[in-house]
Image 1 (cartoon, rainbow, N blue to C red):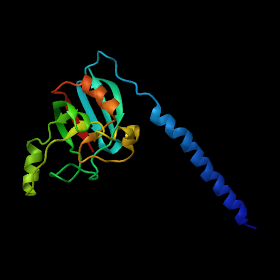
Image 2: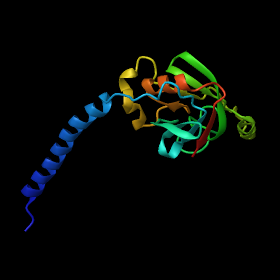
Image 3: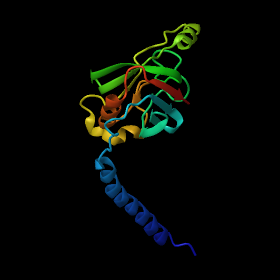
Image 4: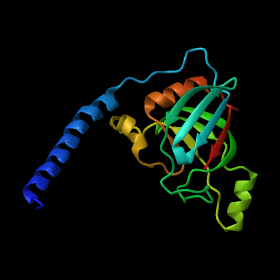
Length: 181
């Protein structure tokens, strides 16, 4: 015969074990030190896979670093117009660097390109601009590595402050960036 008390006790044990596991794992994850790229590396290509939430940094055709990123909170698909909160897809390049951003530091992405502008005009809307790879919003650094647990940007690509410091240091203006679905 089925014993309700036994099932309830098993459920409590599972919940308690999960809670204890989270208490142990989360601080280790949060405080585990960031491992920067080697000092002499120059990033010459960036590839982003939105579906995997990954940014891959390459130098001389070698993968140097993989970052787990947050993307635009507007859902899947290519950015179509200003305000849709989607991260664009396509071939762009790093066109600016800002060490004093409202989001710690940023690397500007050359969005919109000609195709983006034409597509937005067909919808009767502006394409938008100011798409960046950036750190955490100033004053919210405490979020740290948890930033990548949900999509929170307005179409940009989000990293931790340690990660953007590293990528910023090694990435020159003109670096190509390919953004895929």
